[in-house]
Amino acid sequence: MDMPKGVFLHDPPHEETGVLELGVELSAGKSIATRQYNTRAMKIIRPHYLDDSGQVYYIIVNPGGGYVGGDVYRIEASVGEGASMLLTDQSATKVYRTPGDFVVQNINFNVAAGGVLEYIPDQLIMYREADFRQQITAEVSSEGSLFFSDIITPGWSPDGGQFLYEQALLRNEVTMDGELVLVDNLRINPLAAEFGQDKDFFMAGRTHVATAICFDPDINDELIEEIRNVVKENLHEEQRMMGAVTALDRPGFMLRALGNRTEELLALILAVAGKLRGELRGQGPINLRQY
Image 1: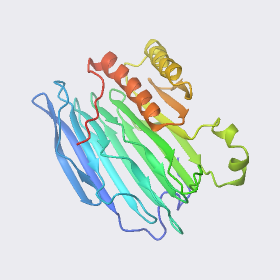
Image 2: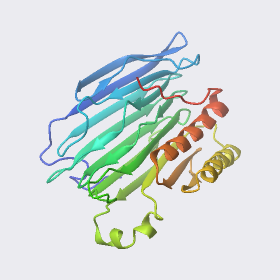
Image 3: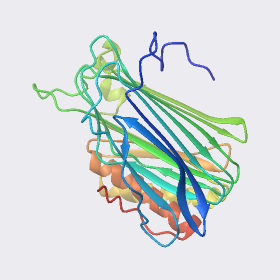
């Protein structure tokens, strides 16, 4: 589904602020990078292996310290047949004031049959008058596994106010074997009058929102119910949170949760990812050692 011109593309186009291209293949039981390119304000830390599954773990680094108006970032990550990659970033993505222009980040994933890609970044912090737009497009094989997430949180304000950023627009599109299977379009524009008047309705009085999307051929109704139980347990422990899991048309699900603290939402996402890793691949919980 095409978006109107200019939503995720500057007009005229801007020079890319940072680019990461990463391709992973399976070799002798371990996943290794067969294609790696990064430039400008986009770096990557050397690979780690957190367990004996052969899954490779990469950490993305932005040495610039934050995003500002006019920035353009692009990430492309592909996982070959039978390979596995866990991808995160070193710290929160901070979007500062963007007067007269916006920040755009375009991410493309490709997962082959038998491949596994998990993308669990730190939170997106939206500061006063920030406009951030991200589009994730993913092509996943019907025999591949994809899990990705995000957390949006309002940044600190000198007057203690919340919801002062201009816009957070996150769009996710997933195609499976060439067929579009998911479109998720989340837009939060707190400075709009209707949001300001009815924010308790729009966000249920919460300030943070988290999303997790997963596709895997071995996901069934029983496993989705187990995931719902994991969510319920976390919501019970953190009563400030609320969330729900929705089954998708293809084997998979989507989680959306609201809360007031980044830590509680990240813990929820990691708990869900950990349950999936254990049930589907016999892996342990994720420990995001970001160094």
